[in-house]
Length: 495
View 1 (tube, one colour):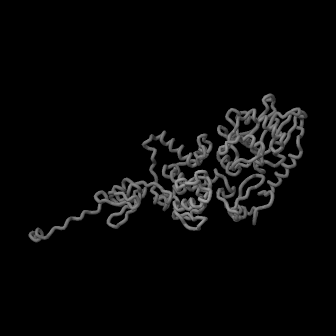
View 2 (cartoon, one colour; view 1 turned 180 degrees about the vertical axis):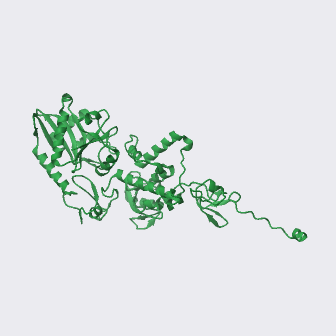
View 3 (cartoon, rainbow, N blue to C red; view 1 turned 120 degrees about the vertical axis):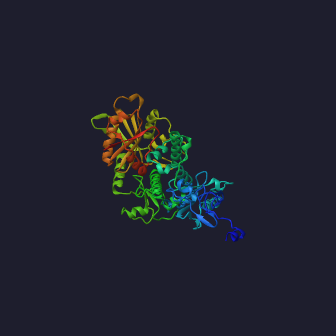
């Protein structure tokens, strides 16, 4: 037997398949690897068999190095579109100037339903379709797909969402991070999410050092599937919370807090209508769902969301017609309410306010906001037509002025208030606010809010104002789009 074994040709010994000894090919990046999973986190192939990347819980091949050292992958835009929290959301193709070229709806499985051709397209195909749609004049000559970007209806790009997830910001974000980035002076048109992610990465770099800036995160396949011993589910929950908070910051329907709306002339459930008094937005479908009203077409003339808003509007018209009114107990003082369109009131108001306020340029147009607000005008996407001019006269001379924006029966916003320089220190501003409070109570307004610097904070607290909580500020900001200037904090007073 030993002789026969020596004569018989020997067959080479087949070693057990080991990820360290055999070269494997990545199915995504086509790179060679000796591990069960590629460094990009995709599937690798060996001998016609496929192995999936290890999960964050160490779910690789038992005994392999991957189980002890998980390989973390980076999320792509295609995988972002597979996340269930993005399904059903509207997406837009915009050029570098912000012009909307094409709209669609994320339908899951990495596809976008195009509103133009009604086909399910990948994000790259959707951008190319948008480029063809904008070739008729909305797109600049020589524009390419690289010049386009995909935006959600809340104004954030899919690219910035991918960066926020891959950097680890989504897993640890706080509401304050988003609101702080909105007031950053270095924003310069950048999206809220992009600013918040950049600020968070800078803070991580300062706290932990450059070597810890790249954060470990869940594999893309684990997150898309929504499992991984709770890791994927937690991250999907954080994504949903981030989307909800960004929707509230952007504004939109005050019932569902989703800023999406129908941009076509077609009147349907996704059409948005604004109340002419409180200026809140409503989806037509949400109005019917909550039993407020059932609209079949766009109303003619003014539309009010409730009988309270209609009553406030009628009382305001009555007050404007009354003109100057004597202050009770102060015969030398007169109180007057009007619209900024009144040339005499506007001239007196701007003359007082410009003594105390420097020009406030609009973030988009660069125009001074002070005369725009005082004259009850509009600029870009901001509407100030409900702003009233309030003046206090002392012996027929305008000494105090304020701009008051009435938001239905809910609140009155006072962005500007000032006293003429020669009459300061005489208690005239207190007299103005006493008249304001009486007037707002008669109209039916519940609260007053105003922005204040830290220097003037004790003065406002002396007449009953208190600092607004962050939660209350977020709710009011989402529904009424109140104006907060850099370096100020919001105060509130119940009437």
